[in-house]
Image 1 (tube, rainbow, N blue to C red):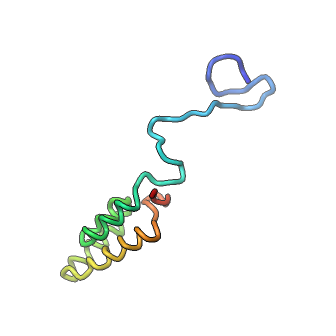
Image 2: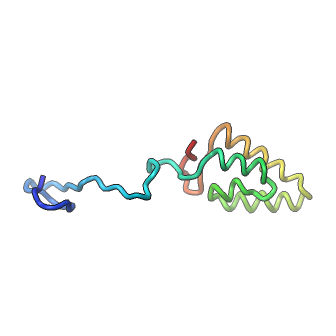
Image 3: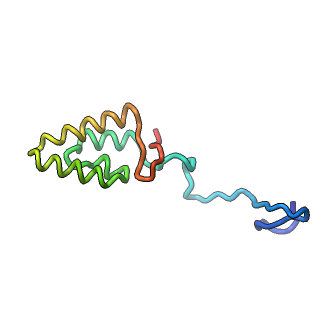
Length: 103
């Protein structure tokens, strides 16, 4: 290990090293979303007509599709959003980047 400051680089043996760096914005593990499955599920149940749960999760395509289906079916499509919200609460889900939702 080098004796100088905290910079990334090579030590005397030629191997690369870098001290562990953390940022104040990294609150959750890298593989887990910052979105909550409870919030997404409740939004899906209460505001399923608007696709709010999917919009919250970052899945805008499905959110728009839920909204369009609800409007075209005169509100019966809201059942999709309600069932989707229940499934998110029970099974979890993934956000728009494919990361699992946090509990």
